[in-house]
Picture 1: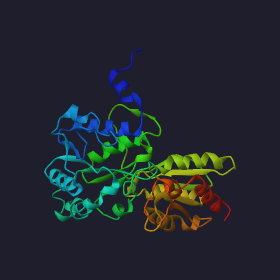
Picture 2 (picture 1 turned 30 degrees about the horizontal axis):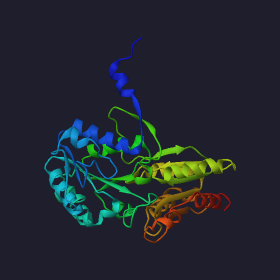
Picture 3 (picture 1 turned 120 degrees about the horizontal axis):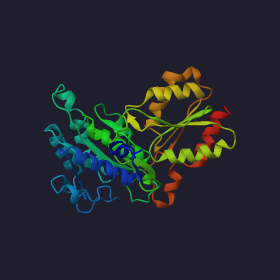
Picture 4 (picture 1 turned 180 degrees about the horizontal axis):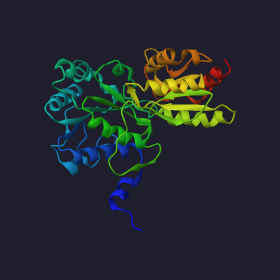
Length: 337
């Protein structure tokens, strides 16, 4: 019996790292839609500082994969103009810590044009932003400032934790009629591989994923913290603690139903993120739990986060990030409350 070629192509997979999956996602959308283009610092000839756009300028030309001046505000401002005129730009900010000069453009134009024009115009653009500590980058390169953008109605924020989600969320972000900030955890770029479909597919924006099923405590996280949390779950499982792991995947809008359902079942929750504690997205998650599962709680919700300081230099970076020990301590605290 022969397999239909079309069906075989749909189910064919390839082992990829996250950076390869991101590259494949961009290749897919460039092939599918001639109005899609990429712009950013060193994205063309050099293939990006992390090689995320490697080979794309060669394949699609300098008019589709465009090297820009070193001007984040200019990159985003140009992308807005392109988007309202029918293009689908993918704008790369080389590091999320470099996004601050573009914040004005994102806040005052990117997120508001649909509202400002009463729906006449939308801004179908994606902003790619590598983020996070743990890669020994210099000052400002390792910031995790997602909460600045989850407080910006009109802008969606996504953050993949796996190669599969990286490709699917990127394609979904490009297809979305509204602007999407696509956060890329640098620490996960080449840390592991996963089988990823060769064909085009999407991961729905606004939907989290239950990575591990459990009964005693819900662990809520995203991005580079997901594999760390999964490692801790294996360790505490030997002590008889059954953990449920939620990977939010979309940070705005949050999947409130997934959070509520899980915490109502387990009665305990720990939120883990690498951004500073004060003003972090974890605060919003705790509020959602209070609104939807307060009467189910058997212990106060714990947070394991970065500290309220700038990401420190190399020798202290590992102390800044959530560690297995800190996460385990928080789990034990809610279990034995």
